[in-house]
Amino acid sequence: MQRRNFIRSSSLALTGIVLTKDLFKRPYQKAYGYNGMLYTLDTSWSKCDPAKYPVNDCHEMVQDAKGRILLLTNETRNNLLIYDTNGQLIDSWGHDFPGGHGLTLHDENGTEFLYITDTVRHQVYKTTLDGKILLTIDAPLEAGIYKETKDFIPTETAIDANGDIFIADGYGAQYILHYDKNGKLLSWFGGRGDGDQHFDNAHGICWDTRRSDHSLLITDRTRNCFKRFSKDGKLIDLIPLPGACVCRPVVHKDHLYAAVLRSPDLKAEGTGFVTILDKDNKVVSNLGGSEPQYQDGHLQPMRQTDKLFVHPHDVCIDRDENLYVAQWASGKVYPYKLRRV
Image (tube, rainbow, N blue to C red; front, side, top):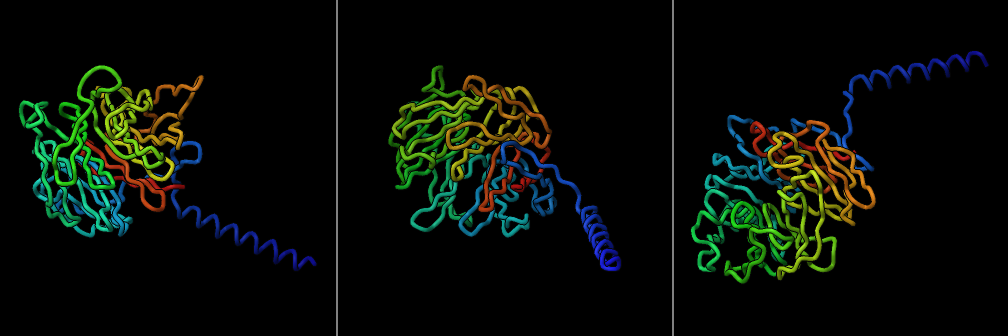
């Protein structure tokens, strides 16, 4: 009996030593976030050589049907960098988008296309995944709402199931412009001005696939909110996000994600974080930001608490629920990966 106990005790002790040694081999990684939406941060995800594949501003990212992560930067040595989910570069292309800003992926009858907005060239492009330009949309001077081409500074697109294109003129006159699939202007709404029907910084736009009413989510970044509109321009509701100058809305399954460029306003440099909302548009987690607090049903002002990011500009969610964050004016850093815990 004593011998058996001795062997058992020795085995447990040895197992403990092995486990302890294994734990020492693995560095501790802090998890960021709240309410079960927790992530660890990997700032060296990208394996690119900056001498060969530099970035300037990393504006937006999408994941295609092959599982590849596509990054748009306004560095014309390589506007598009295409990665696998481990951060290895697969391909690159593009030298013609000095103001490459918005990147939207659309599946058209089983074939995927990209829509790129360029804030310097004042144009929107439809391209193949390998960079062939199929359609170019210029400033709609014929509509009479723009005096000069320079007044049209498109930042984002949303593509309808029939191929219609909705363009957010987020750095320009603040209109939401509706085109058919061939680039013919059909209508517009919004524009700069006071009141909820108007915008001050219509930075992003997407379809809210969580709802059955086929509504559009549109950023009003300066005013710290998203606004929901019908596609014919009728305001449905507002999603206030006090303290958060949000970039484009990104819907994935039941959640709404957004990079918060700065907090509480655009004058506060280096104060970004990432926010996550549930299907009822209640903030459930902030990564690098304060824990979401509600009083009498109203969200309290949010702020940066951990300097994970400088100026996050977009969030991409992969099939394994990991996040990729692209940053603007943040020292030309490559995107970071946040692994879901």
